[in-house]
Length: 223
Image (cartoon, rainbow, N blue to C red):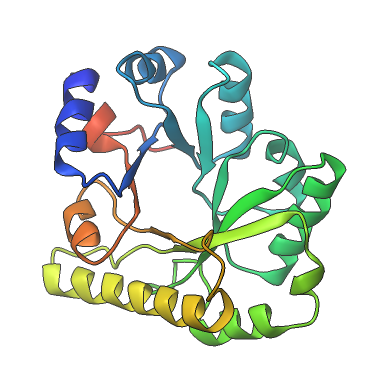
C-alpha cells in the first residue's frame, strides 16, 4: 500500500468540514510515521496498551483519538494526552473520565456513542439513555469533560440504503440533543460516523469525522 498516495486521495474526497482520523490500530511505528510524514496528524487506536506505547514513541503533535470500547479502569492511562474519546456509552465511564481528568487539570473532549446498527454486538446508548444522562443532576458538576457530539457505526452490510438509514438516525439524534441540551454551546458540533467502506455515505448524511484504516494502511491484522 502507498500510504501517502492513499491519504492524498482520501483527503481529496473529503469536504473541508470533515476531519480524517487515520485508524492505526495494529500498525507499526514505521507505518504510522509514513502517514505522519505525509502530513497526517489525527490517528485512532482502540486498545489502551497499544495506544500508550505508541504515544510514548511517536511525535507529540499527533492528536490521538480513542475509538474502541473503553473500560473505566483504563481511563487513567490515556487521560493525560488523549485528544478525543469517541465511544462514551455510560454514566459510569463519563464519571471515570471526569474524575481522572480533574487529577491532571484537563478538560477531556468526548463523544457519546449510540447504537444505531441492527447488531447486538455493537455498543452504545439509546436516545432515551442519553436524555436521562444529560438531564440528570450529576452531569452539570462534571467540569473536566466536554461533550463534543455523537458517534456511531452503521450495520455491517452491503445494503447502502440500510447504512444510509443508520447514519440518518445518528444525525437525527445529534440534532435532537443539540437543540435540547446544547443550544448555545458551539462545542457540540461533531458527528463521528463513517469508515473505509461507508465514509462517503456518512459524509452525505452529515458526518464531521471519518475513521479510516484499511483504505490508508491496507487490510489490518486481526488481533
